[in-house]
Length: 385
Image 1 (spheres, one colour):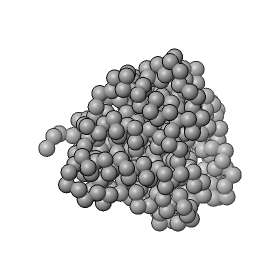
Image 2 (cartoon, one colour; image 1 turned 180 degrees about the vertical axis):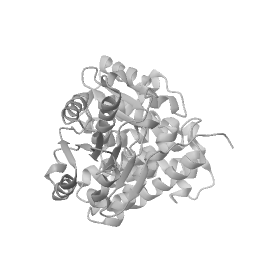
Image 3 (cartoon, one colour; image 1 turned 120 degrees about the horizontal axis):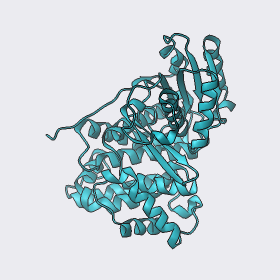
């Protein structure tokens, strides 16, 4: 067996109603002053307002809610200013991946000072950050347990990576009650983000382990079984619970071993055109899988048999069945099947080359099982358009 490293610094608490106790996790801090990072849509919901009222009854909490659907440096800087003015020394992130990623980078600046750009990249953090709690309100990104954050730089039109074991939240509270009101379209899109995490974690080059394999396989199975039902009936608490746990498991897997070409291409598209990350992954996933097919046939076949979408002994046949099943899942969820449907403008020569440059330099590309040339990336983008 090959040597491996698996790191998971976040304590995970799952259960109906557990979000109410989130403040208890950081109340031991003397003079605890909390900045709660969330978004405006969540502040319109009765449950979130109830939680905030409960927390504020016993704690000093200031609320920052100007997080956009795609985490931006502007939002990070505004949240930092608020937290500094309020002398905050702890963070709660309540929301989807953009909210949690924003909170992570806010924590970097509050702890270490400087600007966000001073700390971008992998393993640039030198010490523990301020205490933090993450409460996801979507089931897809795995941001509540991941060791990375992606923040959009509007000036450069690209997404910046921040990555370190110190970046992970101290505690994550998985409360299915918080995702029952997630709209059907977002349920599907965020769920496909988690599906992509699973598949890419299972075919990365040289960094997977028995632990990441088990997490990703089991999470993928849960998503195949329960994501369609969660989209169909948002009040189905069991389906919501299963997708929420699966998302976190997938987050633990890819945080330890990485993702691949689908995420690299998706980050480039999102940085340039502000597309939804989960929907972009859903569009690009079948194309990325076909590109990797010759190098990942055995792993795809193993997934197909585990999911019981194929009982064929021939790996090539089973692997193709997995791709077919992914495309069927995307259709069943009613998600877009091409970049044009995401309002991406026609990709001309200059814009296409810019996307290729961004995707080629994306850290996710390092872990892809097959090396991609610029010509390969162009073809995937053109085929997916």
